[in-house]
Image 1 (tube, rainbow, N blue to C red):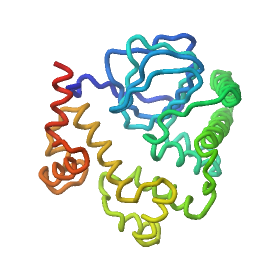
Image 2: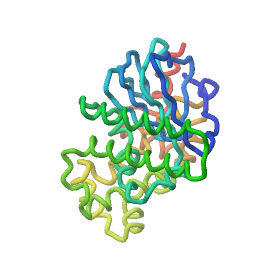
Image 3: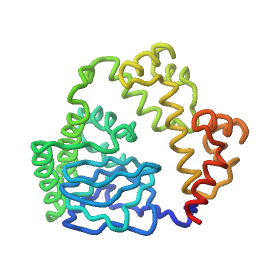
Length: 285
């Protein structure tokens, strides 16, 4: 098992924002990283493997990877990329105009569904230009409104990425889709303590049934499936990448007992938490 000692939690970034240009750079490491910030990786060209939580991706040219804070990732030792790596915190995102908030919700509130975006020639050309402009602004001599300018560039990039994600999404500006994005924002902040569809419905001033129906239309999954998916993703991270006892994980995710958590986990994964963790102990041995 990859114990807690094998996980590197990233340090604080000045102003909660950074951008790095990498050019045929070897990015592999012997340890996993737990993200303290959201991350966008633009791969203009690359080769190797990127593992995010339990999923491994073969690096290719012309693609974007989106990772949310809290996710655990690692580049394989032979990995090499050319492109840009952007990290930003929620406090920095608040500097962007509110008109871009929906784009962030589309991309980052359910990152597993948007982990990798493939770009066509026109999209990679436009995004490379924007990332380069953002990098130049970030590295320019400091001036009074520089952070506002950086935030504006990030807003434009997020809008462009959201358009890549939802090119075929006719409901992007519909009332139901706005409610769905609000639900995803609430879920991202409160899934550890709030498990019931009715609780989120109450926060949104709609019925649990309506919430489930609009989630089904907008994502293909019911509200309960989305909530359970968030819980399972975090449970997997804690089981795989930490040495916390199952009982502590259960309480951290607001289950009343280890038994209740184990029943929930096994119902969704077909493995008990202990058996799931044992897989990684075997791999690491």
